[in-house]
Length: 192
Image (cartoon, rainbow, N blue to C red; front, side, top):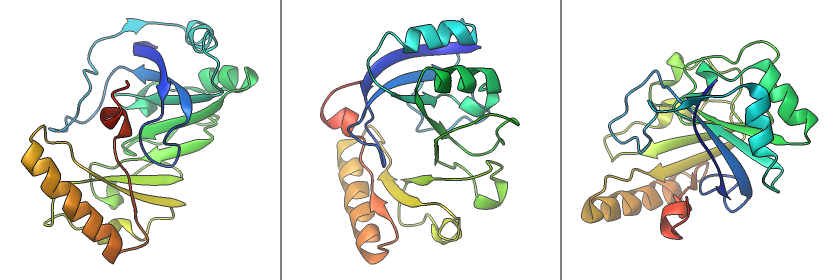
């Protein structure tokens, strides 16, 4: 598997915000989103056993497999070995690919970058939409069978625009209580 990085930090977004977690960032993505903050083209080849050995160096039970797009590489062997080591596996996916047969994931966070009819992931535990402004129609997502609905203001790298998007996101959540506010707390508290 091609791995961009493995590191230990706090989960900064969504349902598990604040939980200590080992992050396994896999290389490669099928999308090129303009607001993506990840260099997902760089990485080194690692076996599933090497990945698990690196993950086990850290005390957390929670493992977040992300990318890029993790469903392009994640496989049954990796998830089997992680579960055998007592790990809880969360993935963060754009949802455009189904998981391969036999891949067991405990929590699926889907952050779609396309309309719901393009989603191929088998289930969604947490739906996380990056809010980009009032012109964004969120109603097609509201019928998805997710357990949690999160709305996160897009980080545009422009302080004035970010403040406007945060305010709009808060107003949207207040008007549509099915949604909950998600912030990138890792950026607020300055951790990875």
